[in-house]
Length: 215
Image 1 (tube, one colour):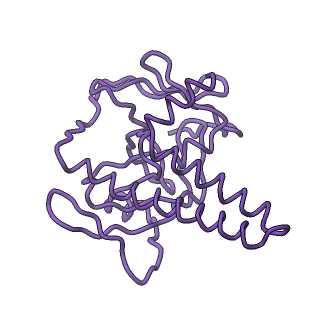
Image 2 (cartoon, rainbow, N blue to C red):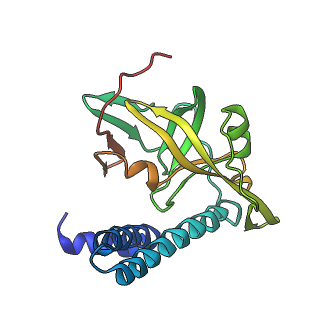
């Protein structure tokens, strides 16, 4: 991917671009904070605000699942994901989306892969079944959905595993507005060595491929 293609991709993924820019500013501010405390602190503060904005926009973004978008569950005869060498390969479902069969804290769950989502999001049912603890904050995040304002809580998934990919201590949002849909976002994909789409196959390459668990 050349520079032009990279900029075109980031223009199509504004939340990802915001998150990357915020991370860059936070890192830059930390680097220059010692020789220039005021400037470094200011730049780092702007970066932190950018990260917070990306988080809040992601929480707002997941509500689109309840406002006119109908994501059907994958068909029963959909080809299963498989591991080939160091890659986990996920075929496109009949609805045009990539679905992953994963284990959240050892409990099987189904996820929709969404490269437009900054954070991974899970339904309240998944949070209960997989025993995903919500973080204790004084005030819950308010989300506006087609059914009115609802609460959304930040959480941490101890382990999310699929194919030869394992993510631990993964930030997530428990979002009632998703219904029973779970979403894998860029905060998980960015942990991988690489990921790409070839034809109708999503190819995921982890940094440290893990042994495939037998069902």
